[in-house]
Length: 201
Image 1 (cartoon, rainbow, N blue to C red):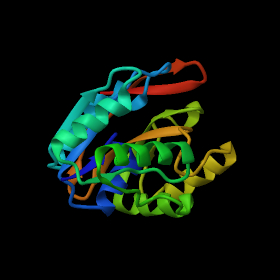
Image 2: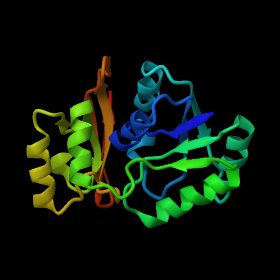
Image 3: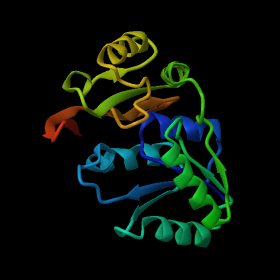
């Protein structure tokens, strides 16, 4: 079984597309000191997964035993290939490599080591997305697609933000990919410390 780790964000969706078809989406529910924009908007992440037609598992992982719990479950599911959307954060890659070893599965990271600007342009060719969280309020609720990705990239460079937000500088939700579209509107934007999170409706 090929299982893709899925948040609904552009990188997780694009990684899954590059490894398509996948047998299951795995959505991890963690406890964070700061709310995760993806978990705040979990209803839309699940809606996207359903519309993509992929069986989806949402798993609440106990604090302090996240990786062990995940590996045990992945083994029971018969995972043979794990797909993730990391690009440059070594700590994330090491975590995924260890998880794959504990699961007895092959890890595929199709974005790893690639140029982030090129990745962003490729993603915008394949899909549209909305920014659901960010360190800078000006980009939150921004909608991005191939028509305006160059302007978005210019704004990210001006703000000193990584093109794909690899270190969490911003988070996204895919709103259109192929024939699949989500009806998404930005509701309230909340500030959590130095981070802004949009609640989608």
